Image (cartoon, helix red, strand yellow):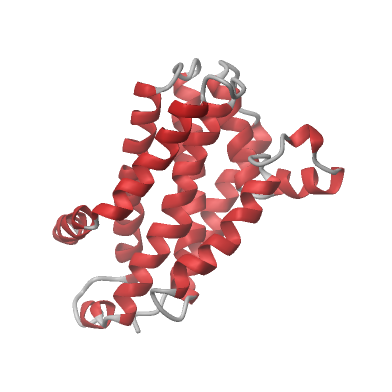
Length: 224
């Protein structure tokens, strides 16, 4: 597994545009809008970086591997689907972590409940990336995967209150957001950033997201 991890890391580092977009966009938004936005804005930028990795970068890379026959060649090795997906999840989790560290370093403040923030970040990132792995498994090719990912990502951002504050959303949209992964992720990140403890309900929804979407991703994964 360490050998696959090393090879995949090198391949990701070569894709400079994806890294620049993932690391740079949330940081630029935070630098230029952070002073005029509300106190919860840095937490939303953390979620934006995770969403970008989960629904744009991750599905595109894995679906392109399948289209180019990379996965077919790997199927002749002892590498299992679970191991392959775990490697992809770990690499992209590192990218999202680096983006978050940059946001904290150059942002207007730091999370006040650090332990809670780290727990929520790991659970939420794993759940959203598991959803991205499902898209990668079902997408017909590398070009369509980011498009499908965007079609899922933008509604999730809406119900999570990223475009319009949750208190201004209709009741039915807030309820949908409460049971989506992105909604509890955004709320729990905001709470821990402000120094509060994450709600148990939010942690349970994120954990369920990891289990459900992770299981589906392993189940529907295709080498070719």
